[in-house]
Structure formats: C-alpha cells, structure tokens
Image 1 (tube, helix red, strand yellow):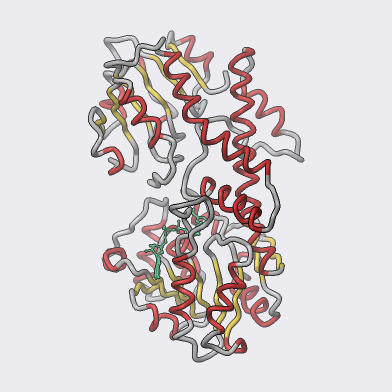
Image 2 (tube, protein in one colour):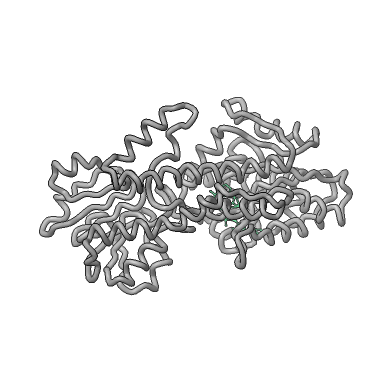
Length: 432
Ligand SMILES: NC(=O)c1ccc[n+]([C@@H]2O[C@H](COP(=O)([O-])OP(=O)(O)OC[C@H]3O[C@@H](n4cnc5c(N)ncnc54)[C@H](O)[C@@H]3O)[C@@H](O)[C@H]2O)c1
C-alpha cells in the first residue's frame, strides 16, 4: 500500500519505518527540512533502540522515502497518517490542535481520488469530526474518509510495541476504510494483535482513557510509597502483592519520580479539559494531575532530609536525566524541575545520561555533564539514580567513590537496600 506519514517525529518516523518494513511504500514528510535532510543522510533525530538499522534498510531498498513536499506526498499516497504534535496549549490545559488543523487544511488541496486520512496523533474526542468538516469544505465526502487510529507505542520500546501491539484500534464506521486498514495491519494481527473497530469518537477516547489510567496507576503507587516511608514498609512488597492480582497487574505499579514524557502530562490535562467542555468532571484524573505536579517537590524534600538540610556546596550526581530509560526525550522530565531547585539551594550538580549532554541544562551555573558513570559519581556526596537504564544496575560504587562518604538516593529502587547495607553504603530508595 502507498502510505504517507505527515510529521516525522517519534510516532511518524517509527510507524512509517515499521510500515515500510512490512512491505508498504511509505513517504515520511516533515516541514523540518533539516530533519528530512539528515534522515536522507542516515542521521536519525531521536534515540530509539534498533531504529537506525531499520531506517537504513528500508531507505536503501527504496520502500521508505523522506520528503518536505506535503502536497506531492499526499498525491502519491492512498493512506495519509497525521502524526504531528498535539502539545498542551500555551494558555491553558487543553490540547493545541493547530498543527492538526493546519495539516487538514493542506490535505484538502491534494485530494483527487479516494484517500483515507488517519489521525495517529493523540487528539481529543470530536477532532475527527472537525477534520472531516475542514476537508469537506473543498472536497466531496465520497473522496475521503477520516479515521482515528491512535498509537500506543512507548518510547524506548517503540519498534517492538509497533510490531507486537496489544491491540490495533480503528475508529471508523466506514466499511471500506475498515477493510483496507484491517488488511494493512494484517501482518500484526496474524502475530497476535487484537484488532478492534469502534466509532471514531470511541477510538479517540480510548487513547486518552488508556494514558490517563496508566498515569493514575503510577500516581497511586507513588502516593502509597509516601505512606510506606512513614511506616517502615517496603513499597516493592506492596507492588508485588498487588500486582499478582490479575485484575490489577504489576506493570506501571513501580514507585518512582513524577511521571513525565511527551504524553502522560499533556494527555491527562487534555482529557480533563475536554470533559469540562462536555460539562463532565473527571475528578480522579484531576487529582492525579495535582498529585503528580507535587511529586518532584516531595522527592526534593526527601533529598533535603537525607542531607540533613545541608545542601550548600554538596556535590549531587544525577544518573539519568531523561523522563525514563532508553530514550533521549527530555519532555516533562522531573529532572527539569529538580536540578534547578537543587542548584538554587547551593548544590553543585553533575549528571551522566547514556544519551548524552542535554541542552536544557547548558545555561545553568553549577551543572556539569560527565561523559561516563565513573567520572560522574567519583566526587559525589549524593548519587541520585533518576532513570532505570541497565547501565546503572550493576555499579560497583565502593570501587569508584574511594575517598569520601557518599549516599545513594535510588529513585527507581533498582538496588536492594539489604545488599547496600551489607556493603556499608548509606542507601535510600523510594517508599522504603
Ligand atoms: N512520543 C510518543 O511516545 C507518542 C506515543 C503515542 C502517541 N503520541 C502522539 O503522537 C503525536 C506526535 O507525537 P511525537 O512525539 O511523534 O511528536 P514530535 O514532536 O516528535 O513530532 C511531530 C513532527 O510533526 C512535524 N510537523 C508539524 N506540523 C507539520 C506539518 N504541517 N507538516 C509536516 N510536518 C509537520 C514536526 O516538525 C515534528 O517533526 C502526538 O499527538 C502524541 O501525543 C506520541
């Protein structure tokens, strides 16, 4: 099939590459010329395990193309995936849909035969109705069908998630589009993905409801961790004990820093705002948002307590600064608020991240980047394990930090407190 991905970010690039790997002809379009020029040279804009090999393979066999020419790419394609950003509005909590509607306005100039227009971007319920309205101002409804096909991939696991999704959700009441899309996804369905066909509005809501639920699970266990810290109970025992109940499940039930990234913070706010538009109060989600927003200050308070209030001139090392492991994405990472707060209190922060130095900290005084774990931690008074990279799971701390006393605050609970005690290391986890 001939596909066009509009927006070559995480979602557009990963799904475009994976669709081409399944044998489709795919054009990945972006308005960012530098990104497209780089991709043509084999320079991948994001860190995503396995992505570069897959791009190279499919670009070389010419099933995958990159372009900045939206009109031409749409004309050459039968199925158009809109994968542009839907960030939080600058003045409010709702989703900013300007990129989506701009694309819809451009698409309507390039439809001369039947095309399926798909929103893969996460969009509030009824956005599909609006896109249909915009396009039909110029094009007969017989020539296009607007479908919602939300994407559930996780950064860091994106290729695996795309190739082996739990489910493929297709929101359309148009039988012809449903049949074509079922065929497009048939290689994934035959590997076990469940295919569900719903109304367009339901598909739009499924995505937000799923993200809001996962954010709720994280926030729930984070709040319980706060309680555990006061009653000498280990949150890990609670997570395991709860998670073994099949109705609950253990995933997304690990206490840690505030949830961040490009999706959960913006999507929880957007669904609560959308509900308000329809005069519905999603109070659970609203309190999740509030609790998560307080999470970083709670963890900072713990840092102050651990250091007995003596923060000034302390060398604090952050291991990992992205919002989670296996990605270079800094969007809404809790380190973005924690590191500046520690600096303000007089600390000196040194960080290491397997995906390299981050622009976000370049302008801050007293923040330095180390290019390896050893040099990052060797002079530290406090080592904060902020993300769960495998690189951080077997560090011989006593061997590296030789001549000074140091403390570890493991915000991901990747080490065992008993083992740390045996090694005579002062160690704190989250919720224990
Ligand atoms: N990142 C994720 O893990 C993830 C997972 C599932 C769903 N989503 C959703 O998918 C959507 C895209 O997210 P992302 O992380 O890939 O965003 P992104 O910011 O990484 O990429 C969006 C791309 O769209 C391009 N773009 C914007 N307007 C354009 C236009 N008119 N023409 C061509 N290109 C244009 C931008 O230049 C950018 O490269 C969002 O709605 C997001 O919520 C993201």
